[in-house]
Image 1 (tube, rainbow, N blue to C red):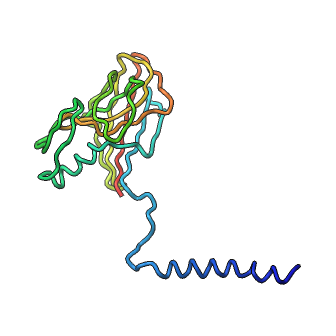
Image 2: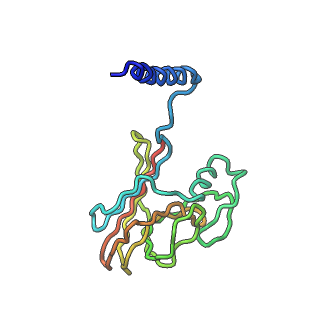
Image 3: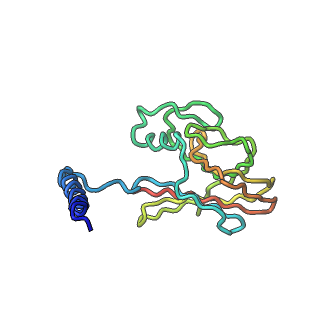
Length: 195
């Protein structure tokens, strides 16, 4: 073996170790660790006739979901929320209004961060007693409701709306439409987990 090539090859690992050691030693003491997905997470579970048919561990929220969170923290400066009918509203006080999960049959209803209107064709179920649970151990709240399918068709997505307005909070397009018929029961479960 050529000794001239061996020496530079042995130096490369030493240079890398020295560089990484210097980088890590130079980090500020207040840096506790790198971000590892420890943020708020919205999970979606979809059941058809009590059988789990879809899971999304990273369901997309809308702008209005965030604005309603802010409403409880800084409501005096939080304005310009949009209801599902497109009207603007500010400062919802004494909300006490129901929430709903829904399934969409609308093939032209696509997720965008600023979407606010409900689909042109959907069926909904009200979140009622038993549909709201808190898990203090995992720091999560679960919102769920079942929809007794009346119309049927191909479900192209599911979502959650409610509160003052009412307001659209979540919508998740399904990668493959789910076929349902009148008499089927679809249960939509949203789990909100905080770090």
